[in-house]
Length: 130
Picture 1 (cartoon, rainbow, N blue to C red):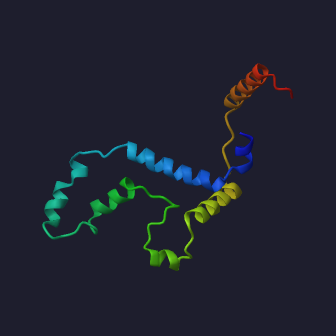
Picture 2 (cartoon, helix red, strand yellow; picture 1 turned 90 degrees about the vertical axis):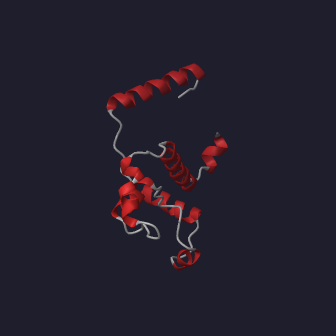
Picture 3 (cartoon, helix red, strand yellow; picture 1 turned 90 degrees about the horizontal axis):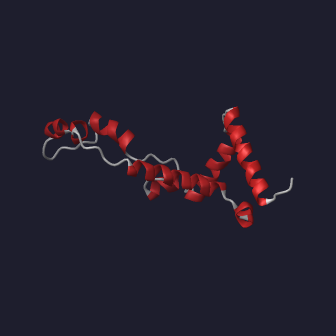
């Protein structure tokens, strides 16, 4: 635990958070119903057509596909044109932004008191001196 505290990488925490969001979205599954099957859109587009400009497709891509701020889905050429920042660099930049700008809501006083009591109990149990 001492080593962990001395080698913690905030960028890695940001990456882990993105992965957790993607896993959570995957675990939600894929709903199968009239809206998601979109049989009417399939009939409208027909054989040989494409769905990319259909409002139904656009609406569902915004909500059903994982939208990561860190994982770059550009082509290599576009990625290079935008500065070729790798995942570690983007994650570190995002972590710095969060640390500099995030203003967390304070815990409710009852929650803070419960946590304090838990810590004090653990300290008594383990003989931690203050």
